[in-house]
Length: 338
Ligand code: EPU
Image (cartoon, rainbow, N blue to C red; front, side, top):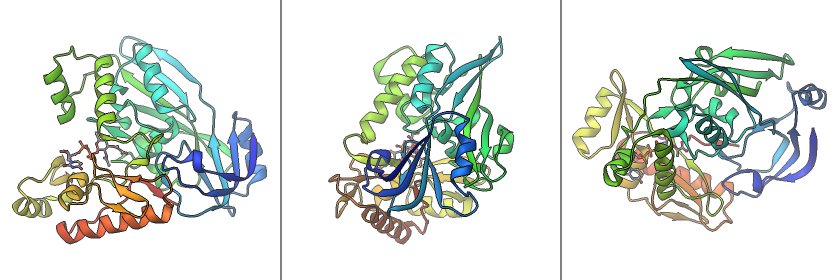
């Protein structure tokens, strides 16, 4: 276990916000978790478990402990004709995991290529993109219960996965330090390209559709729309796509016939927040050192590299207010604000 005092988090959040944490603790093996409970009183002390900081906005210095799990082993634990089971440590970089799967001939995660973050965060956030959500493949999650000081395992069913949500953001928030995620990939994996951007890519490029070409297509589409955080700080989509009932949906559609939406379940519709923000004329809108991304309005960026967390938060409030005034829909942030 490594402990750093008065540590800058600028390199540890993809917005590139300069803030200081009182303590920064790196976990290097499972044994460190017991040491951690001697160091921190988890019932009283302030702490936060950070992956690579790709879904977080720091608005202030952090007066407590930031904990980062650096364990990153990946293992195929079972293979048969029906499925492959792969266990990955929570600190593993998500895209390295996707690459490992493809190199091992295990398919399913290709649509989730290029998402910044860790394996642990994939379960917390139920990451999703291009027609797939990671909860389709999660089998079980192991975590260290910081209050009861013991390792526990829960099945995917008990993780209560919904759109960008899980038990780890609710009942187990501030309590579970995820140590590993086990995924189960069916051998008979259906390739999914029924997402507008992928359909366009494959119909214009006439390339054979296989898991590797899907990964390449996803990486290309992502790179063409989403800014590279190493160049321009951002945390991907800042807001979730709001889900509305059919009454609200029909009302919106009658006023905005070009509304972009996806039916999600009976009588529920997910409305493209990026489209709404764009429709409000906010694409490229600049506020102090922050801005709405020019190619994808759902993404807020640290435009000059000097933005403070406050500036990005204020920009998000402006966006929310404008969307509410136009559509009477409240946007919720996807990014965790600290
Ligand atoms: N749109 C616009 N203008 C914009 C942005 C989007 O008109 O400025 C339209 C698009 O043309 C499209 C629709 O809105 O018709 C949806 O846009 P897109 O396909 O880019 O996806 P999204 O709903 O904005 C979601 C995820 C992304 C994920 C993409 C691709 C959320 C909050 N975001 O974005 O995830 O990469 O789908 O699957 O669900 C993330 O979570 O950080 C993230 C990047």
